[in-house]
Length: 177
Image (tube, rainbow, N blue to C red):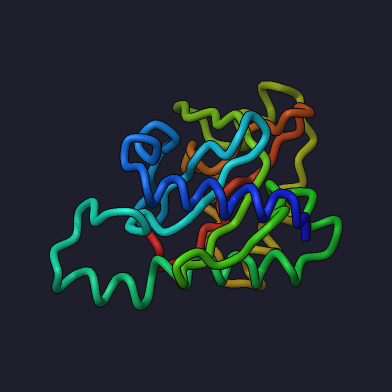
């Protein structure tokens, strides 16, 4: 675990908590459960989207979703990451640091250029002549009961890392979107 990145993440999340304007400026986007923040030019932080304010939930919804989805999604992704073989890990954007902030799990990952287009992952790889191991990804999805379709068809769930490698950025956990 990268202790320097972990300290940087804690300092960053504390600043987000104290300064709503900074939190909004640093936010790259939000999914159903989490928000991604630009930690610096090289890394992002993913944490429950309601960590700093209640974006879209009333009080009744907050208890149910907070207790189950937002916290558990990150914990499950970290758990899966720790069980992957090196070859399987090469398919994903790596989790380089993780911890808890205000009792909410978070993870730090390298910055990825998300394609966010109309093409699925297989078409992107074919177009760019990338040899990506979709068969192995499908095996990982089956083993951990992940949504393979979500990983390869949701265009916000894959992209290119800074070295130009094609990576999956979301584990496609069923029930978290």
